[in-house]
Amino acid sequence: MPGILNRFLKYVRINTQASEHSSTYPSTPGQLDLSRLLAAECRELGLSDVSADSFGIVMATVPATVSHRAPIIAWLAHVDTSPETSGANVKPIVHENYDGRDLVLPGDPSKIIRVSENPALRDLIGATIVTTDGTTLLGADDKAGIAAIMTAAEHLVAHPELPHGPIRICFTCDEEIGHGVDKVDLEKLGAVCAYTLDGDGQGMVDCETFSADLAIVTVTGINIHPSIAKGKMVNAIRILSQFLSRLPMDTLSPETTDERDGFLHPYHMEGSVAKATVRIILRDFETPKLREYTALLESIAADLRKAHPRAAIDIQFVEQYRNMRDGLDKEPRALPKALAATRAAGLEPRQTIIRGGTDGSRLTALGLPTPNLSTGEHNPHSPLEWTSVEEMQKAADVLVALAVEWGKENE
Ligand SMILES: [Zn+2]
Image (cartoon, rainbow, N blue to C red):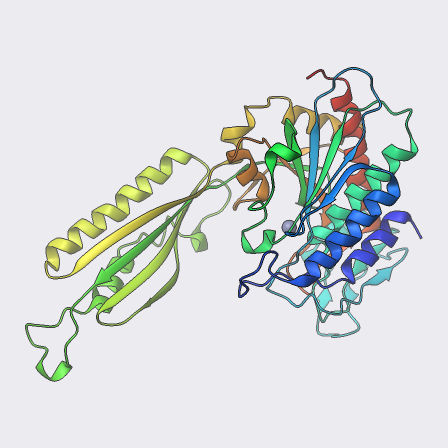
């Protein structure tokens, strides 16, 4: 069995499902188990500066083989899996010499990975596909990324004749619940740029994400028993529903947009007569557009204040993350090097945009330019998740080529 498959199968059997209902970091103890295993594997490989802290953050260095001062780059992947589908007792199924047919998952035959819905399978006839048994997620998101990084590190250690600079490896926790970079010490990481290994398929370089803000609209009304409410009650629920009905539905909602369109998306509301709130996310690839969306929400609030002078209507805006593109310019070599490495690994690179955020968009906003690379994952967060050994190996090949590409540079 190829080394990368062995590694992957070992990692997915450890339950690292993140939990939103936890007050610890990382949110679940299984993440620490995988972190400790990875730190031990890094030591076995002979990597230097291996550390694993109490937050489960693992760092290690593949030492340089060139004598000039090449820039330090970093490779990142997250150990946790999504809270959306169980990650306990994952029973990975290895389909060798894939024959091109739909894959029926034996633990739940109602779960079928259909070729019609997974066109990438058409290019993988003869390959080794790994699926779940249909009862859990697989965890290729992001253990395919971890397996690619460890395999690339192993390759570099075994081939000291390959010229490269220092590579920092970093495994993070709780990415799936939005806390992937909370505990990452960027100074300790010490890289000029980084790459997250957390993308779909193969050959893709994600270099743009949404810019994102959150609006929390709160309507404060006046409650009184309905029997004596005439002229006294101000119902926050009714006013908030008027607010929501004035959000554009045909043009600026996720249900009606795709590609480069932005949107306003109310995703959670709660309330009673006295007080009602709704949380609305604002998304666009063009950061200045967020100001237009903010202005739109403010104007709806202003109108409703006039119509309901006894209600209080407040909007609180929270900045969430910014389009990765805005910060990639800080290290102009980050993206071209990823494209060159993808070509060197025999793939035609595709620059892709993500209608969401990645750890890379947050790291980029913090000053560490971080594009996202393919790992071979497909259908993340689902029992229909799958990957292939060949795509994971390509991800590792891209990393080795990336190390060599950066080894040509000077600090
Ligand atoms: Zn992921």
